[in-house]
Structure formats: C-alpha cells, structure tokens
Amino acid sequence: MILDRTTKERDFKALCEALLSARDADEMARFLTDLTTPGEREALAERWRVAQLLEAGKSYREISAETGVSTTTVTRVARFLAQEPHQGYRLILDRLKGTAR
Image (cartoon, rainbow, N blue to C red; front, side, top):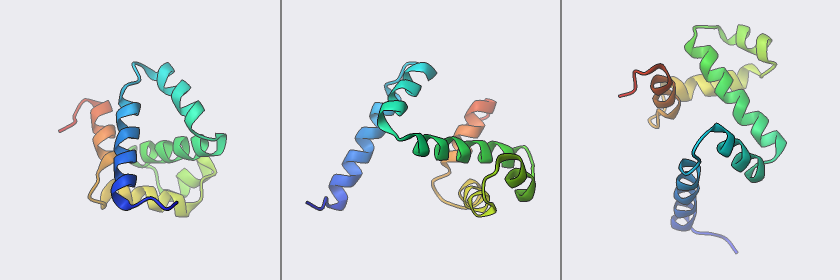
C-alpha cells in the first residue's frame, strides 16, 4: 500500500504533535529511543551539533574535524540554517538563546 501525500502530511503532523506532548527532555529521550534506531538518533544529534557549531562561527572543516561528520553533511545543515524557507534550525537556535521571533 502506497500512502498518498495528504496521508503522509497528516501522519507527519501527528508525529509533530506527539513530540510536543513530551513534558521534559527525559520524556522526549524515552519517546525518541522507542521511535528511532540508534543510527537515526545519532544522525539527528550530529546534525543538531553541526547547527550549533555553525552558529558559533566554526568553519566547515573545523566542524568536520571536531565531529567526524562529512563536509557534505555540514554543507547541508548550513544550507538549511541559512537558505531554506523552513528555518527550523534558526527558530530553535534563536529560541534557545532567548531571541526567537
């Protein structure tokens, strides 16, 4: 069975709502541990770390050397941080700094 786009979007929205229901970091960790594989959790954590290091002004090469993440991944995160319309990284980075719009 192939799900149509509307169903996939509805399912993604439901996942977002489920993520928002966690009351603290421990509950979120428990949910993500059940929801994802160890590799998926590692990839998500790596991307988030890359976003934070980019925000701190580190170069792509410095980030790659410090984290072991490929420069391709660093470039991808940088593109989403600076250019893509979603601005999810920016929103959360700013919120954590207390400057969210």
